[in-house]
Figure 1 (cartoon, one colour):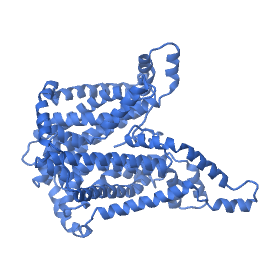
Figure 2 (figure 1 turned 180 degrees about the horizontal axis):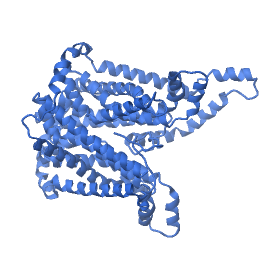
Figure 3 (figure 1 turned 90 degrees about the vertical axis):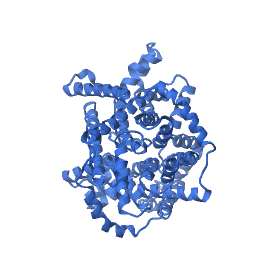
Figure 4 (figure 1 turned 45 degrees about the vertical axis):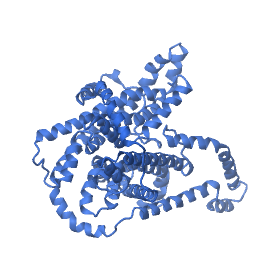
Length: 589
């Protein structure tokens, strides 16, 4: 879930909330004091959660023998036969790409009615925002659980689950981008008698297209990582083979498949950065591996880019020509290198989508038989019930999930402040320190939390400790990157002023850099907490503790009324966290 402050345009490289300036604690407004006290209470609860989940350094050291035994059982890493591996990889990519494209298409009308400057009315806007929140709050694995019952074993449950869940993020960012467009072109089309559709397609869409494409690419990267978990509920692909390998204790094959998924995530990130740079002209500024590779390639091409700009300037119609000839020349767009590149990129994107449809091997007949199965499944989902389990059991499990999320967020926050600060150019003492911190964040970001959780569970055993460590470690990569970017974007004036009067580097950091980045720090931390709550639920499916264990048990046992009850609990917690986060951003605005 991504929530940006009003008037703040999401960054294309991370799509996360970015706020700047120090927290206005000095105003002592009642709302400000309430928000500060709430932050302190959440911090205390995070420390309590860290103690409650039972992370123990001595126990982790004692489990080293388990790690050695696991490494011995893995032995030589193995992979499926090459033809089978290529088929599974193509199927996984096909499902992810098709599902993401489905979400991208469906997000357009949702964003249109959710944006303040394009919505037909307040009621429509409230509906658009509600659909986005609902889509983000319901995990894709839960949607896949239900759809697997209605479709035959295949790719459609995964595609639809990814598509419906991804609408929330894409439509939210798309609506925010629409609200920040230049109103001139749209108003000019309206004054000329254009329809609402013409206003949107000609006056709004061209301005927000780069933001929309970049968001879709980033969502595709997230969906690829999440596809691993979909395999645990019956969606075909690499994720399902990974789950079968670990369930059958074939660790050598499981680790091999995990390496393949890791490599795919890295490739997806590089492709995403390349498209933003080459096709959209958006230079990446993030610290992911894809952004680093593309920035280096862009530096090598900078000379040819300037030459292409000069060529484009020479193709513009001369001001000495008659007006009619200038208008005619301007109407004939020249085929510059940029236009050729963008056209080829657009056709390449169409080709990739068509390939994904074919690779997904969709059983189109399920769309017809689905309607006969849907009523029975829906009846079994309602009314919600805990079944034979007591309410105390279920609420304790939900509390454990919340504790895992808070403890993991605290671990990620503490480590990210250190590593992220050293990764910022204006904080790092030397270039070597900055480079080391940057590559540390790159390496951590490339590890899907589910795979790390599976490995930790094998070593440390079932329970919340493995899930907390997995979320905490993987959260460092994302939160550290966001903190580094936010610290680099603070105003240099206060830093230079303190340096000029002889302040040390630590004094400059604590008195100028950190206070200015405090708002962004709060926003990024709440985003991480929101992500961790849903991720903690999902990690419980593979044995990471919490409500996820009961969720997968209810699904496998056919107790779908229990699935509904658990989903409603998750939804309530997610909405509460989002409400608190929105309130915090409004108070510290």
